[in-house]
Amino acid sequence: MRAGVIGLGDMGSGLAKNLIANGFQTTGRDLLDQRMQAFGDMGGKTAESAAEVGAAADAVFVMVMKGCEAKEVILGADGLVQTMAPGGAVILSATVHPSEAREIGAALGGTGLHLIDTPVSGGYPGAQAGTLTMMAAAPDEVLDRFAPVMHAVSASIHRVGTEPGQGQTVKAVLQSLLGAMFSATFEAASLAAKAGIPGQVIYDVVSTSSGGCGITSNALEKIIDRQFEGTGSHINTMHKDLTISMALGQELGVPLHTAAAAMQIFHAGRTKYPNGDNWVCTRVMEEIVGAELHR
Image (cartoon, rainbow, N blue to C red; front, side, top):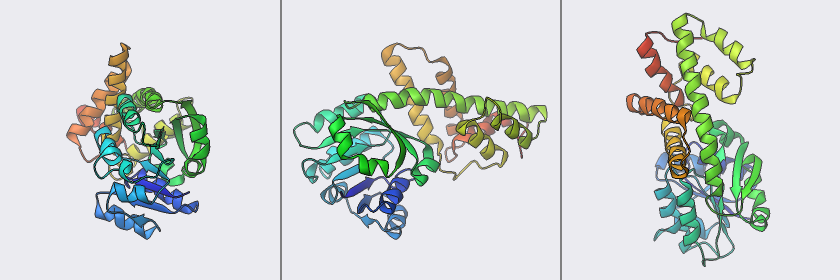
């Protein structure tokens, strides 16, 4: 089975690395030359367009930022639909609105191509290590057939439905929770800073207590080491994901009080520090209270 990856950023580069490491011939495309160079250096075959990726692959992971970008690389005049052979799979691993996944699935009807709607969780570390969690929605026979390429990039594959949009819906629910966890961690860090608690102390206590988990421990470690950029978790991604969660809540009439607060915290962080990673939200709070949390 030949693989492809469109979008070779923090997440897509990890997908590509692990596909290659597992022996899959992998063709990739990204708009940035430096990403294409890095992909070629790891053993990937570079392509000049999404259509060129499709012509060389049986299964293509689409890991772009926005739904409109996913539609373009899949359905556009130079998209995958133009060249992929019937029976192939478009693996939508990007996080987009559920409605956008449904639109893509409907547009692929009659093409002979399968859509696997499977957003992922695990961030940059999970992508690079090949330990992502996948929320996969497609018929069982499709998931069975393309399980080898999916297992190459993940540690857990949850079959959450059979129709496009069902994977994205589960991801939207998950991100409403993770956003709240992040924002609570940023607030706790600011409170500790103002109270004069050393960063190492609060990190040790939280990471070994009932509050300890991957989200809180990783965020606190980045905060106390003052690593606010270049850690592989750009604030734009979580900000975008929370807009999707909030839109789903509005569509279904579900109040999301804590997710809404998290959305505003991320919005503040993104506005003040547009090049920062998730934890840069803490800097905004620290500036308000006049204290910083250091290790």
